Image (cartoon, rainbow, N blue to C red):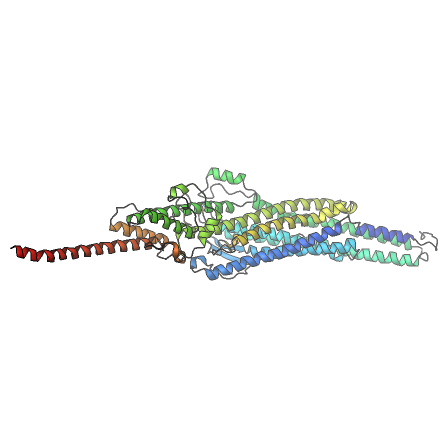
Length: 603
């Protein structure tokens, strides 16, 4: 077939038309506002990176400060290493591998943000400036893997922590080896398969780009030499155009084989997080009604969140019980020691305020407080006390468990929702890549298929990060170990199991305060009550009361503790008895000396 004839003086050649058509097919015509959308997506991911680093830095600084300030060894983590990736924790069935979600999660989050920033900027260069497309194939091929890794690390950490916290009260023991094989196998196997498919997709893209560059060079050469071309030049051009089209079809259809296997990891996340029901009777403290409630509410919330919530409620009951018991003890001891009722009420009010409570501001009786709920600010104020007390221990426990529960719940919801969305996007991409709708359709369809997952992931992750930063700033000024992450709440504290109590006043995790002594009002009674108070609150003076020494300028000084109040009252009572005895003996002796001469004279 001869080359198409044409007028040598014509400015437009057939090869010019082919070049323009080919560029339109390859580069497409972007929709209006595409550049602004890509810049916005890149800026959001930059904010996401700095926010993740800020959250990691805040929590790490908070943990270091709490470790330095912690004077009690029970509040200090056994391992002072802050940056660890995986930790092997002892169980009865072997060592369980628990990943560090904050470090690994931050690494995957930064990888996701960097990937989307690179793709957004490269898309501007390709579709707006008509630059080279080689880098775009790499960004698109390896775009989803960091998201899969982040989601699976979240699920891995949550489920292993769940096993550690419920191990003691479980009727059966899950093998640590099987758990490790399952999580490591899905993580390594799923990511390995995704990497292989992505590498194949990337290589197909490079072959397509090489074929396109060769075809474009031939067209430019033919256009420059037109009409002085060989007889078979046009046929060779059409044949090469067919090869380029076939390379493009192989590239886009390889995307179907890339995105299809990638569904395995988000599907595994959905199954483990949302659809994994507990075995009936697996926990001694869970009845049939509780299991039914859990099954009906098991949407992106692990059973561990429910366990932690039950522990939070139980510790709040313990805290209110401790406050009630302390009030009853203090009132009884002060009344028996002879302290006036008005002074007792004032001292109780000052003592309650020093413990971060406002329970006795309008009443002198704890019965008026029964049935009310403790606010978060009251619990935080109680956790800042310098002296060790039963109320402080309960407040610290409540704060740590509350923060761990919220982090775990946010991470679980984030992983589950993103996984559900990505499964839909991957299914859609698999279909439109297989039937080439992604190429033959409009640019809006191409943009929605490629970039919508980035918008959704970035937006939802930013919302989650804002909530986590708010929580971190909320507890950043506390002197408790609130910086322990949800994934490490047990491993950092020696992996002591947190279990739901089988009844309202008995639990291996916390000890209830001793019952109020109801013996007589003798001297041994005071000693017995003082022993109970010492067991509850320790023989430690309250420095807050010393800082408020101007509270009372009378003989009643600020209370340094219930035991100190009793000792002072006993000493005052004994001193009064000694003074009265000395005064009476002196008066009697003086009366005898005065009456002796009178009797003699009368005789």
